[in-house]
Image 1: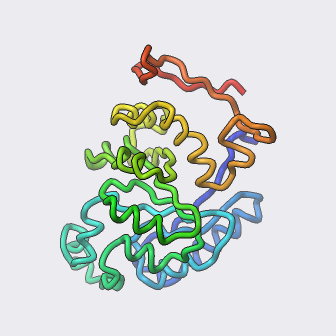
Image 2: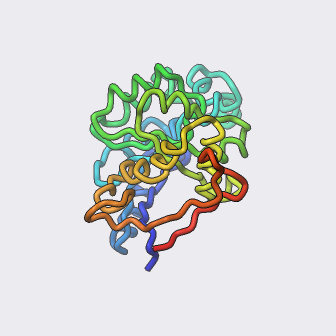
Image 3: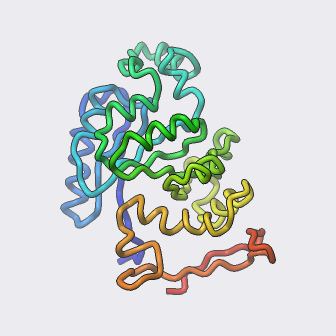
Length: 253
């Protein structure tokens, strides 16, 4: 009965998986209950080659949602270096995807080019990697930024300015309460504004950006004929349209 439009990503996680069958079973239960659900791999470092391939194999209306380049160790893992590689060695697990050379190449070579994909975090992605991914995929690519989560976990910041300059599709996320102090969208928006992102772009990323990422822009994300978006007021902004400690979002319908 919630007025919120939900898309449920059933993440496959765990190096013991050899297929996505368990995630498909959960997804089928959700779909049978009338929910919008889809299988997705968790990340480029938490699944074997076979399990990752199985998780991205089946298309559908729900995009993939993959944690990507949240830490520098993700790239180092492919070279057998860093803390992740040490953990793999301690658990005596083989990095059977190291031959891709990098998380970016694994995404490009293992994800079908026509799939829609949300790349989450992106703190350590380079401009060249953004260009490589954008030029490869025919489906929609959305770079999802969870700034406060990154600050909470590792004191890192996603390259919002670079993504703005590249003109790519961006959406704003919060991650979860396991990795953030709150699920406040206004907090995430304020954090991006503090990085110098103009407020009109922040508002675009918070609304249309998310709707387009989920392919629900025909019914949500903007005030337009045929859209069923709620109306949200943003109050407590400064004279120069900057976020302040009093900034507040409130849904009025």
